[in-house]
Image (tube, rainbow, N blue to C red; front, side):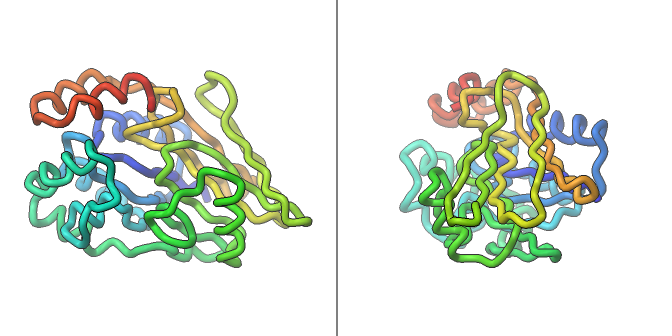
Length: 248
């Protein structure tokens, strides 16, 4: 089975469409989503509709939760907070209901794999460092945990002595492959579809191939100027618009 891994779409349908097209060319059988379908970007309803059409197994993200009215944005930064009421007002009743019904992680996938948004410890928590990864490893018995939230594609692995190793996609290549050892636990982030923060503006996704025990990390260019134009028309904060070009 080949599972398309997507996360942190953030209402960016141009990026999502580019990822789906590239993934279709690479081939996939099912879709796994680590959340944050909405937030920040200009097309929350279209993003929800496209994701729903993929029939994914998904968990909610913190932006999904807040946009659907299930919590406050107290921990969001200023620009993220500014985008919340716009997203709430823009969401259709149907899209908001879909977001409200998304389960909080961890969500088991079978075979020792699971989905979370932020970390095993909570959807608002970040896995940014080896110490963060070690805490999530301690909190789960799953061998494979797919997560998002940081907007950085990466692979954390746990060594037999308890040491944590971090690998990240290297260079400007459009594809990087990580081979998985069946005896090693992993935390895997496919990167952000709609708002990468690793100084690469291209949309990110991954494909988990269970037959070969590999995860393929992909980057694809998309017409981000179109997304930026829509954001300006919506009156969304300028820093959110400009950051797309710089991948941060």
